[in-house]
Image 1 (cartoon, rainbow, N blue to C red):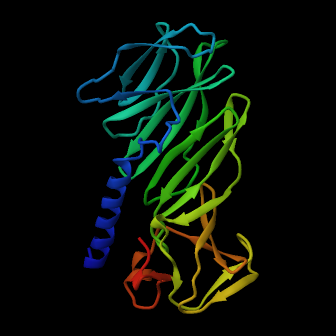
Image 2 (image 1 turned 90 degrees about the vertical axis):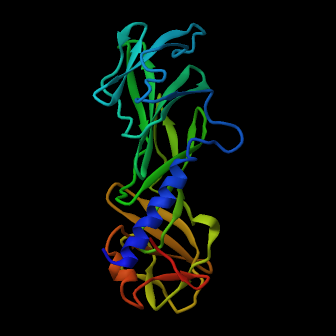
Image 3 (image 1 turned 120 degrees about the horizontal axis):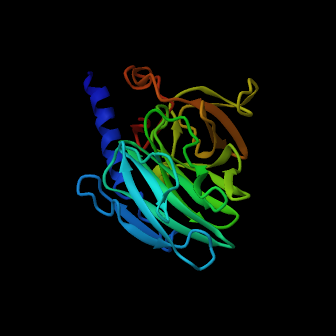
Length: 282
């Protein structure tokens, strides 16, 4: 492995470790009422009964969490209420109890594995007496780290943030929102607010075309070396990620990726941006 590629890889490991070490810490008021911490090694809180109201009637259910095949299985009032629930491969991990009112109560499973983190929202269906999946925050294609955090949860909306590391620009933050759909939540839009981590300023390294919209071939503007182009918006799906960069009142779009490190950093002049004299990117 080239020294530069090794340095890039080590930077990713350090950043991912930093984020994963703090992602369960809410800013100010927490978005949950109770957090139950687990550890597969010590069996902390495994196969233990908890009294949790899952229906909103004021009467607690007896809830137990078992580890089966390295995943979690929910038991409610002595009956198996779920199949295997993914928790990733990371210890320790947590399950969150969230009551947003009007009978909307969720157990939120934290799935963490290396540079990846997602949250799965489950609710208890009294008719089938099983746990139903209401939302899986994993909505973005990201081969180089996808770390979600929950900002707030209400009856109508879930606000989140996601830390990504695309090749061309480095550490960025997206702020997707999910809206209620019955007991479920769905993605409000594939477009969302976005910014660089630590708000570092992006300056163009070279001449580059930015387009009027996602998938468009019409040019919004062409960058010049030294031009300030702050990241303001993002478009994401399971298959792709685009960044919206502001030049005055115009937003220009470029597709982002997680590959070809040497294309951008192994040869002089191929990078898109720099900040404070440093080439930006993963």
